[in-house]
Length: 209
Image (tube, rainbow, N blue to C red; front, side, top):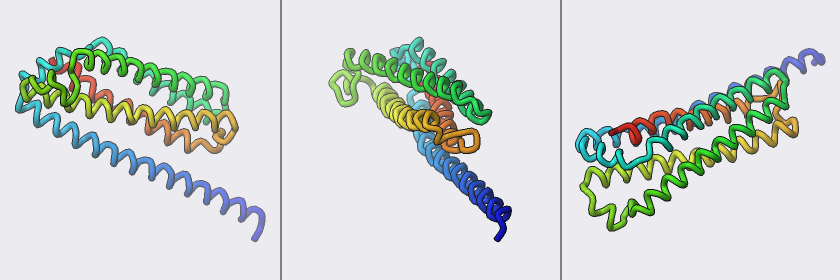
C-alpha cells in the first residue's frame, strides 16, 4: 500500500473518531435534557396545583443574585465559545485566556450560590427542618424542588469546571491543537447545556412572583 493511501486511511480514521465523539456527546446531552425535562415537568404540575404558594415562596429568593448568576453563566458561554474558535484558528494564548476566564466565572457562580443557600439555611429554610415543615404544602414543594434542581445544576457546574480544567491543561500542553480540538468542542457543548439549564431555572424560581 502506498504512502498516499496510508495517509488517506489515517485521515479517514481520525474523521470517524471525531464524528463518533461528537455523536457520543450529543447522546449524553440528550440524557441530561431528559433528566432535567422530567424535573421541569414535576415543577409544572405542582406549580399548577399551588400557584399562590409557589409565588409566595419565590418572593423569598434573591432575584439580584439570580440575575447576576445568569449574566455570569451567559458570559462564560461566550468565553468558552471564543476559546474553541481561537484554538481552531491556532491562537493558543487566546484559547488559554478564555478558558481561564470561563473557570473564574464558574467559580463566581458557585460562590454566589453558596451565599444564597447559606442565607436560606440561616433562616431555617432547610429540607426537613421544623421551619420548613411548618410551611404550607405548596411552599414545601417549591423549596424542595428549588434545592434539588439548583443543587443538581450546581453539581453539573462543578463537573463542568473539572472537565474544562483538564481541557485547559491539554491546550497548554499542546494535546489540543488547531487540528485536534474535538475534546474542547465537546466540553464546550456540555458547558452550553449547563448554561441553558440555568436559563430555564432562573425564571421558574426567581421570577415566579
